[in-house]
Image 1 (tube, helix red, strand yellow):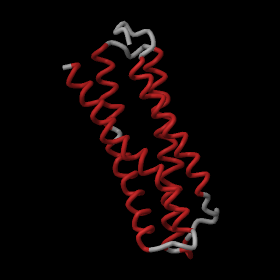
Image 2 (tube, helix red, strand yellow; image 1 turned 60 degrees about the vertical axis):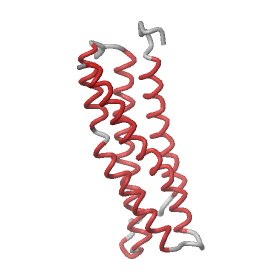
Image 3 (cartoon, helix red, strand yellow; image 1 turned 45 degrees about the vertical axis):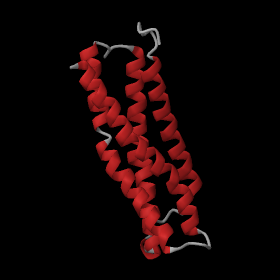
Length: 156
């Protein structure tokens, strides 16, 4: 059963987190293109698509920590420092996505489609890129912790 749970955890991470990290990373560059002089309908459509990918796969991504928690319980490693650190980093990544990245993307979509209803704060693609970079670094760190597992007896 543990092998099945671990497989589901890894598959969920690949299928859900991968698209969010890529789409979120592409969003600021596309936003710069939309805000620039060479903006076109395709760029706006791409912006909406990237945001939708982020939003949908963020919801699907909830499966990653759920499968991870159940897998860790079956392996008896819930109290291990590397796992607790991974859970905290995962929570931080989720907070950054939910409270910083997705709302900034929604504001950007509002601003680029209907400037009259734009939020009062100006768009800052560089700031959004920074949040996305931190989000991606957190997931990269979690991935490394999952592979290395400090103190593991597997020899890795």
